[in-house]
Length: 176
Image (cartoon, one colour):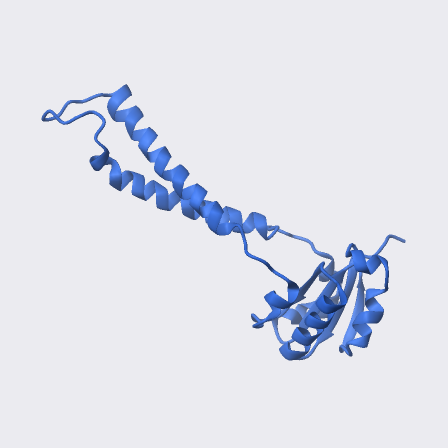
């Protein structure tokens, strides 16, 4: 028999899962997640989420887009195909601003989507919580708190006993 992935408890209301998450965080659990049919205010703070690096990723994407637009137009207009029209300079930055702006927006948005997917660990076609048939109700009317067995505190005490002490509807062992 393999070691379990973790333990999961089912709650009826968002207040119950929020209180359980806060108690788990106070107890010392750090590797846990909450699944609910809608966003529950306060859960992110109770889970200990910190700032994300998506804004920095978007900034890098935007700067790369602007620089790419500039290099592209220098290469095309001043190096590969120089065309002197009306005596304007070959390196005409004001004329290139629209293209640089468009590439800034395009590449920044691509970095935003790809950065968000990477930081969320998506796509994730399989997760051990999918082995619990009742988990399908997480998208309808139930709230779940899952604690991973890889949590440092889970090695010292049994998370299932802790979850049972929170008085959930049911608890499960999550098999990998």
